[in-house]
Length: 187
Ligand SMILES: [Cu+2]
Image: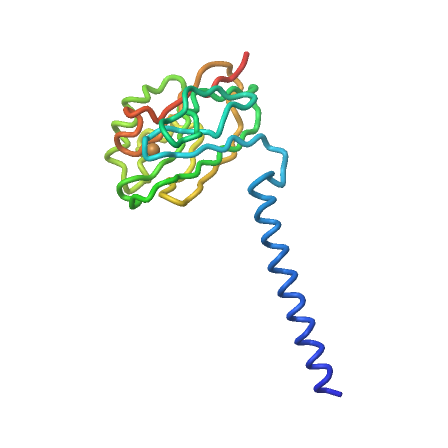
């Protein structure tokens, strides 16, 4: 009797594990396709070519040309939001290079910040993920650094003041290579 119960328990466990595995796979897929909440999400890709890229034009963003041969991605240029809108930025880095050579972040700056000066200061801030601590007051929102194969994200509330806010990648050299764009807060 005891043995039979043990067998049933093992069978149940096996069933549970099998179902659980399947379910978590489905959930992962769901999560990748549609986030559980209804926060507007901008998914972008950081490329070795040092651009923020997206897989095509979508409502509320503008893009420019494709990024070269064998690449369906387009360069992301502007993100348009409503004042005070809640936004999620998801940044995936695609690279085979080591993290020390290639990583990306997404950093939104105040309108009175000179982005070129900010990224210049960031070069000295490697220990702080290339965010210069003394200028942290100029950062409105930021993701962490994502190396090849990693994804980083941030949820933030867009500024209430209409205007054009620059965002940059602060990894050395990426801003000047074109890893930048504009968040437009509509009036
Ligand atoms: Cu970058």
